[in-house]
Structure formats: C-alpha cells, structure tokens
Image (cartoon, rainbow, N blue to C red; front, side, top):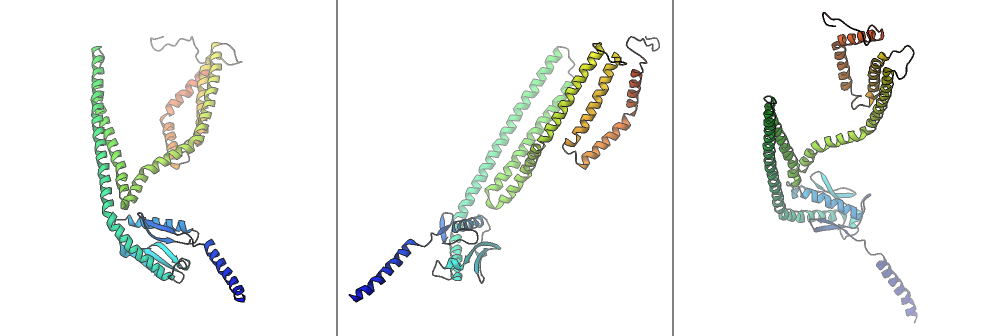
Length: 371
C-alpha cells in the first residue's frame, strides 16, 4: 500500500510531462521548393524574417541561379564561421545555417550545413540536367513564334501601305483630272505625287523599325539569361515616355494659369474694342479725343496688352528657366530689333502723323498726276 502511494505521484508527473509534449509539438517546417521538388525545410526564422519568409527567399535565390544557362554545381561552396555556416553560389549568399537550426535536428551546425550542401549539389544537378534541355526547347519555340508573328505583321504592314499608296495616288490623279477638265492649272500639282509616295514609304519604314525594336525585348525576355538586355531596351522607350507624361501632368497647373491669363486679356481686348468701335461711330465722345483716333488707339492698346500678357506668362512656359531657352529668346529679340528698325521708325512716324491730325478722313492727296 505504501508503495502504491509512492508510485502514484510518479505516474502523475509522467502523464503531466506527456501532456506538455502534446501541448507543445515541434514547429511546422517551411519547405524550400525548386521546380516542384522539396529540398529541405526550415523550422526557425533568421534575423527579421520568419521561417516562411526565409524559405521563400532561399527558394527565389535557387530558382534564379537555376535559370542561368551557365549554372555550375561546382560553384556551390560552404564556409563555416564561429557563429554561422554560409552556403555560397559563386560570390552570392544562398542560405545561412545557425545553431538554432541545428537544435531541430540530430546534427550540429556544421554537419547540418554540409548536409544541405550535399542535397543542393545532388538535387540541383539532377533538376538542371532534366529541365534545362526541356526549358531551352520551349524557349526556342517561343522565340520562333515571336519571329513568325513579327514576319506576318511586317507582311501585313507592307501590303496595307501598298494598298493605301495605290488608292491615295489614284484619288489624287482623279482629282487632278477633274480640275484639269474644268480648266484649272494642275501642272504643278503633279509634283506632289513623289512627295506623297516618299512620305508613305518613310511612314511604313518607321512602323516596321518600331515593330522590330519592340520585338527584340520580347525575344530577350524569353531567355532567362538575356532578361537584363530586354529590360534595358524597354527602358530606352518606356523611360522617355514616362518622363514626358510626368512632365505633362506636372505642367497642367502652369497651363491652367496661362489659359486664365489669356482669357482675361482676350475679354479685356473685347471690351476695349467695343469702346473703340462706339467712339469711332460717334455713339459717345471723350473730350479732346477725335473719333478717327479710336481705331489706331485700339491697335496700340492691343499690342501693349499682348506684350504685357507674354511677359506675365513667360515664367510659366515650359523650359523658361533653361539658360538655352533664355539665350535663344534674347538672340531672337536682338535679330528683331536690328531687322525691324526701319519698320518701327515708319510705325512711330505714322502714329505721330495720326495723333497730330496731319491728315484726316476726307482729305485728298496728290501723288504725281494721281489724286
């Protein structure tokens, strides 16, 4: 009886321990999968990454190196340090094994890392040799399909442009013939025919070149080892378009400002023109202001308002802050100043004569024998 009382507590402790084991099962492993083949599992996270994130990162790294045509098993290396064991492919880190990883196996850290390296060398070699030829054949087939599609597109463009060219030239000749029947001079109009033909040819060649250029990134994108070239070629087209669209979007506030300034100037000029017309008609008068001054005064105000408007909107023009733009503007202004000095002198003389009333409507002028 006394022995029974001694055995019961031991049995209860044993059952409690078993319950604790059942309540705290080992963590679920996160698999590292390459081409639907599970290589090994991680039971613990590392650094800021959970076990699942760590397995996904290693999976992506392995799939990336497997996609390279020059993949080599001999480039897998293991380096053991005091705290961690690291497996490299060439100079790139694939995965790191810590003592915490080894605590979930019967091996120590270095042995577990060596086991992972052996698994990688064996399984990746088998997967690469099995799938490389298959993937290469698929990639070549896709490339041939792209080339065939490109060939048919070019054939369709050539055929379409021949049809467009034929119909355009025939319509032009029919139009010229009808005009000639009506007695219109059409001899010089026929000189436009070679121009139209060349313009259509240039347009066709530009479209074909654009199609070929866009087909190259698609071809390079098919093969994993040429993807960087594809991204670079696409960047030559996408980046300028993106920059242009962003510039347009960012310029919208300035464009709205220019529209508002132009609208205000336009309606002010309409108001000034209304008063000038009424003054010219004699609907109302201004002291010491003659009706014949209304039209030239309106023209002077219009020039001044447009000049003021241009000065106001100049900072909002695209590229106005560029030194090149400012230099070209100054150069054009200097050319205009030197080239129009006589015209400006005549304009000033005309204004002076107008406002001095040296002549007025109804005066007769004699030039030689002509009055």
